Length: 200
Image (cartoon, rainbow, N blue to C red):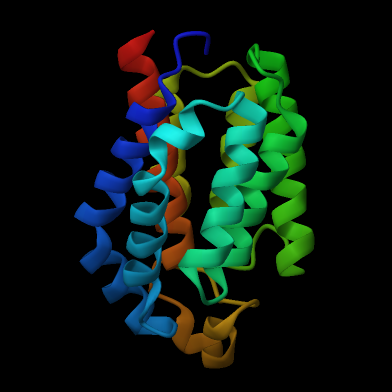
């Protein structure tokens, strides 16, 4: 974690979301408002535009600032949820986190997202990716393994029935579709894993 290049990581995350914006929109059109891809792309481009400013801050302050920017720019239900994830992570993480601190901070951030969304694991939300990633961190999995776990967790939302968010209004018709928030969360986890892994 000491070699973290935040500006590079922000750019990689914005690139990843932009590359998958149409996919995220299609997923959201199936069981949501259909704006998830566009909203996430807008939010991460806004973060990219201030990457140098964020990079000049300590890691905790940078994460809190990124979270605030996402709340302001992503919009919809996703803005507060992804913003909460980053802000809570910034509140709990140390300036130079070790594995134990990262795992602890990620766990607290996951709890904050659950509280903000009034949701829990198994309800077809981004929590269904966050919790397995937290478990993988606690288990000492490698970055590559964590990225694969996140992808598999997003895939696992397909057969679930949505119990929170707009998709829950569809009832059984939400079954058979991947949750867009879970997919975007997995994409971000993979970006972090691959970017940090490449610089380690």
